[in-house]
Length: 480
Ligand SMILES: Cc1cc2nc3c(=O)[nH]c(=O)nc-3n(C[C@H](O)[C@H](O)[C@H](O)COP(=O)(O)OP(=O)(O)OC[C@H]3O[C@@H](n4cnc5c(N)ncnc54)[C@H](O)[C@@H]3O)c2cc1C
Image 1 (cartoon, rainbow, N blue to C red):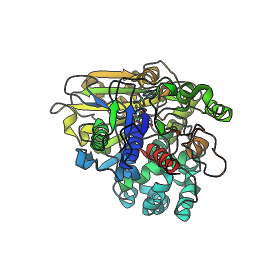
Image 2 (image 1 turned 60 degrees about the vertical axis):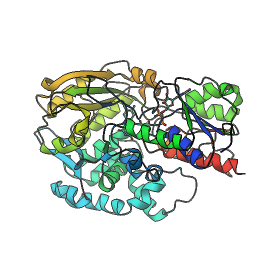
Image 3 (image 1 turned 45 degrees about the vertical axis):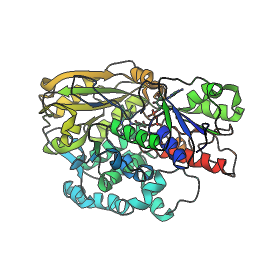
Image 4 (image 1 turned 60 degrees about the horizontal axis):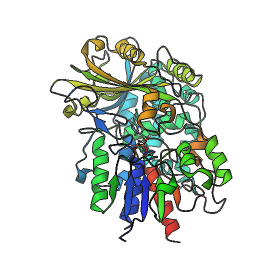
């Protein structure tokens, strides 16, 4: 390692830290500069409600970390991270006490879907069999011929469809709702092309690695990444917001864990005009309203499957979930929103004092929405778990505008740092540069400056693959 700083990383979210580690593992001297007082971006844990209740401030459920090539190559366990995997990855209750649930193998899940058992096996069976071939390609930018084109082609044939269309392969309300709940993570109307891919990827991960939470909270992942960075001589500086690239110390490479809007501000007129135009066109998605609860006991779900599930998707039938997402896109707050709820206490009793529980949940709202919609989220939980409200000891609410203030990467409360449209997911925010030879979605058009946040492929989630991809691109450029 040289004495001076070789690499500056701005932002210490999972992608910033993945970029920093990838560079440090290559023997370079790395300095991470984080604006907030604590590192971790969307991967932090804090006592948000009452003493002794540990809440995941942002990410809570980690199928993407468990299947990401970056994290698989990182010794999380050696740095104290234990992934706790619930028996049921996710459940989706319907009115009347029934619930669809995804657990274990494709056969096990199909067995609970009655008339949809065969259709579910046909849809998920081949994809789960080939998940080891498909997921690495899906979690990488589309730059070259995929390593397993046939398997990826099979995935694409289903994944490129709107989720609402793919759901027609299933006949029961339960089967369709199971798919809708997973696909609605996309934060897009379920009639949008490619929304099926979000659902299928999440279902494939559920069948292959499960949907784990981290013992003690997601912040343990950040702590582990920072511990390895420190072992490699990397330095972290917190509480310093970078407002211009000119304010950074000299370095051979700068990796920015920020979104296109901030890149425009940081680089100003330095960016080539065509890149500035492309960055201005970058689209952000809807926001979320996030709620954390301290509860005096477990949620009294009517359906038994929900009591064992780490994640519960609320919102009723496919038609209801689709309506909720369409309303959000149209700029309205749904009366009965689709909600994502995680109950880490199902597998991690360390989150709350004995017998008590934390609960994590959010629903999608229009971008920049300042409204506290915790009442509507609680009404949805109460719908499927009568008596829930009686257990609430305390709650902490972050509206979409609060999230934007909490982390500048959540523009308007968009937790994925950009709308998950097909174009943006595959190509990222910057225009192919240089085109066509050597195009790489992490290059910004400024020599030595790279974008490494979730705004780049493969998009949102704690998988570190945007950071690792940007760092590999920077290393290749440095070795020229
Ligand atoms: C409520 C919520 C729930 C989520 N749930 C899940 C989940 O369950 N599972 C999952 O996989 N993902 C989840 N996510 C998404 C996941 O957290 C993000 O996709 C992920 O954190 C993106 O990582 P990143 O490194 O790109 O950016 P971030 O994690 O957003 O980190 C960016 C960092 O850069 C810093 N920064 C930005 N600008 C500057 C600047 N100018 N100067 C200095 N520092 C700067 C920020 O302070 C921040 O720390 C959730 C997110 C939210 C908000």
